[in-house]
Image (tube, rainbow, N blue to C red; front, side):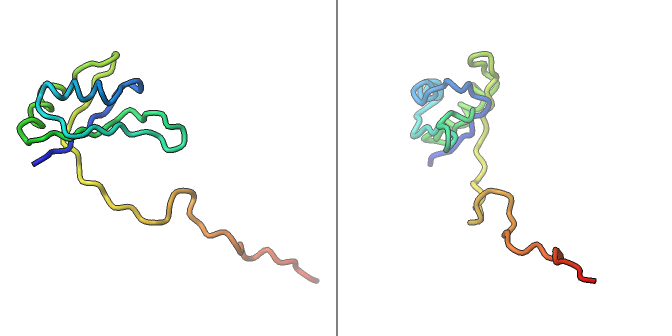
Length: 107
């Protein structure tokens, strides 16, 4: 059974190949996903690495967590389940339209 790991505090210059090599020393890596900003395409400084087994994942956590890459101590932990999001999107909420109370006074 595969196990997904969260990898944080990564240098923005890290590549999937470099992560695959780093985690490959602990066991078989089934996937690597570096998270990027939708607008700029720039890396956000974290990734998800999926290991082929629980044993490989635990070995990766114990051996790689806290390791320094480009002067950054990376964090490795078991990934938490993704929380479903609502369909409202981003922004400031609100529906716009009538603000109320702005009528003129006569008299």
